[in-house]
Length: 518
Image 1 (tube, rainbow, N blue to C red):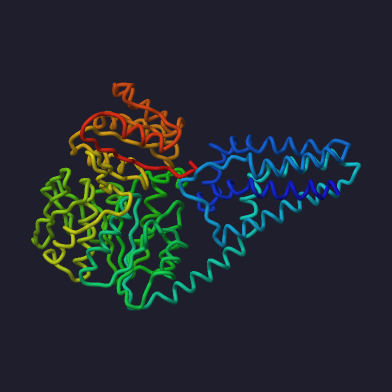
Image 2 (cartoon, rainbow, N blue to C red):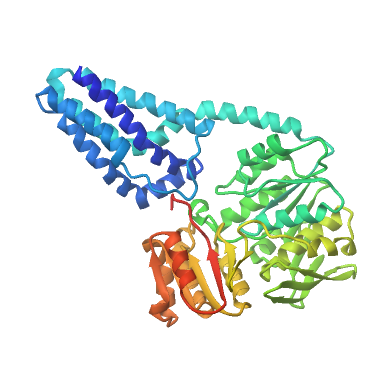
């Protein structure tokens, strides 16, 4: 009887402990490469947290049944009371997929308990070592359970994809938007501007994976919609092509190419080819809109047919539409948009950051293709709102203003955010954990980020000892006062310090806010 109690306590305790592991796997989009990165960076700490439970299992090797009852009781206490969970930035969601993995994991753990029982009394040591190993093995059993469910998940995905495709009517104009950065903002601006004339649906927030796009279509597309603006994200070669195979875009916008997600893409060439999967998928009567201000896009595009846009510094050869005479301050941007045919209008917007002139120009280029005129879209540009967590201006009162650029960070984006911060008066503070997923370039890019921070910010609150080290090194290299930089374990601690330092009017830039699996 005491063995049955021990097995049940092991099973329940291991399942309780697996919730954190499954959460990290979920934050990694159920993909092993991202989960493996977390496992290398933090998984050792989690394994150490599991170790006391493994020692509890070893207690059951005692000859007396009392030891096994004691081990069972400690398992229960460890699972319910002692196992550290902590506060999550993005809470675990028990989706249908997560539930399937959880059930498969429960069966695997039951199998481990059964294997331990088969040892019999003569194999008591083997029995307990099996339980101890199974407990720590949860770190690998979670992705293994997901792997076993691959055929099931594929069948579920295909059913949802077919349903989404049935909802995509032939008369619906699909506009794809991709790029290493700028795609969410550009998608948002296209949707807002086209709403002057059309009933537009855009993929919400950052629903830019194949199944995210499918979910947006199934849950939000209505018969009254005439335009669907679809953001297309990618972490691996073929990701954009997969989304194009689902939605079949007629037009496509390529915003930029840079070393974002270089950790999974491996090379910049792979990134360029993946982003151009959108251009390659367009039909003969479709139009590609290419940011000619990006050197890698210019190089790869060659002489292929496309509408080329950019922010011009006076050299307009090869451009079809461009922004010039750009002015930026704390109230936003103003600039002229000019077409090759000679049309010109002055635009003003409350959007922050000179780079947003580029994103707005792309959106205006699409609007012209869709039958609007420059004059038509002037009021729409004036009313543009930023995408959430993309240089979103949040006045807090009492002389405090927050610029929320928390969604993501990349070399170009961090430089643009610091440029936007620089035009403000008062004390300037940055809160950031730095940039991730840059592969071998990550340390150098974060160090360069530190050098740029030193030129703009009065104070720097860095998050994460490991992540912050190269940024701190860059600050030191730039001669930054060490008393004006702090490193914190949590974002909350960093933000509270940022609020407290300095006197008078203050602007805090939140640049990236990494989820818990980093």
